Amino acid sequence: MFDLTNKIALVTGAGSGIGAAIAVTLASAGARVYVTDRNEGPARETAGRIHGSATALTLDVTDEQQCIERARQVLAESGRLDILVNCAGIGHVGTILQTGGADLDRVYACNVRGVFNVSKVFVPSMLERRAGSIINIASVGGVVGIRDRVAYCTSKFAVVGLTKSMALDHALAGVRINCLCPGRVETPFVAKRLAEYPDPEQARREMTASQAVGRMGRPDEIAAAALYLASDESSFITGSALMIDGGWSAGK
Image (tube, helix red, strand yellow):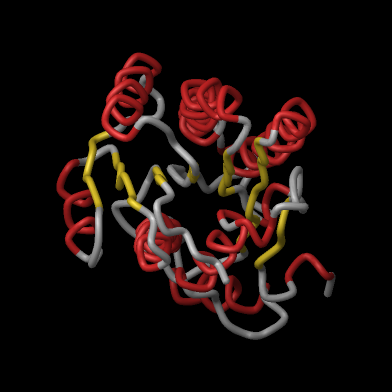
């Protein structure tokens, strides 16, 4: 099960955290993986962890022209893309009173336009082949509101909506689009958010308490779900927002 032998995958934001774990997991299942990140160094580090076929590429998902160029490169080299994982994302801590318009624009540009930009350049080739799986990394904050996360939740609710809309548009053409909605996960991304609080340790305790299981998740737990959605075993799933949140969204 979950055999990705001969599949071609591309993961954005794969320099660390969830993106890195997904890239490594897809490769371990047999996929050839394009490991992309805004910074070359982290992308190369992740590619170096892969015991198989991996190519590190720089990719700023907010740069529409660069997305076009990278798609041309991947399709010229590999002939197709079977699996696209849109993981690149940023966050922001603050209520609406603490969030400037520039803050909202910055988060939206990466978290929403980034998914839009990368998907747009690869969907045509998937439609032509009538096959493909796109996995967008949303958040529990794309399904339920989170205090002090106005910009972030706005962007992740948009990712969930974008996922469902795309899924309906292309279901009959054999292209599946789903998203994962993680809770708090032990990653450099979360560490940066904690550092923004006046009392990081208290913030950590509160973040951990959000999950019914009493702990944060691990990147490999999110990667396991991505592997399932990337595989043929999930062929009847599209337009789904899969919660991987330790019970957070189930309620208190």
